[in-house]
Amino acid sequence: MNARSKLGLVAVLGVIMVGVLLVLRQNPNQNAPLAATSTVPAVVASAIPQSTPAATSIPAAASTMTADEQRVMDIILSSSPQFTTSSGDCFRILHSEPWCSVVQDARQITRPEWVELFPQTKFFLAAAKSVGGETSTTHNLLVIEQNGQRYQAETFDSLLEVNQIVITEQNRELVAKAFALITLKDYLEEQIDFTDWQAGKWESGYTLTMSDS
Image (cartoon, rainbow, N blue to C red):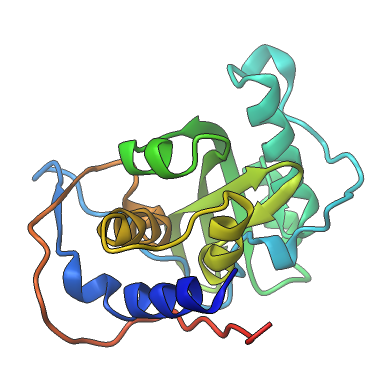
């Protein structure tokens, strides 16, 4: 990635939550999904080995997932012994661990912004319920794959690079939207609309560090 594109990426990511305002069209009778507790690690590239042993899969008779979706489900289950598909297993896990997460399914999803920017990338969303102590939360896990590699919000610059995307004045808003959607994994089941690009300033939970090389 050349110096110009790096500077452009820094500028875009610095104003993602500034230039893009999100309107979530949610069912008024349905509460927004709760964020995962801080003790539950996200399933991200750094947490999932690129070569993992096969995990116990959901029985074929009970699964309507495609082969790719089942493979991603197995990756998630292999990423931590505290992930399971059974509530019964979760009770057993909680005897020795502070939390347990029951993963319900995994399915491939898409968004127009992703299709336009990353046509070769696959996005999977898995629903999970995490239990720890006296609390439980429902949340989504986002798995992003391309050419056998997995990506996350913190490695978004690498995803741009592997897709040979150089940030320009013409595509910077599209890049910002694509990144914003990746950070909103708990809301990807909802209809998400973007308002007009506007100026503003507030804190973002993501910080990217890029080298000069």
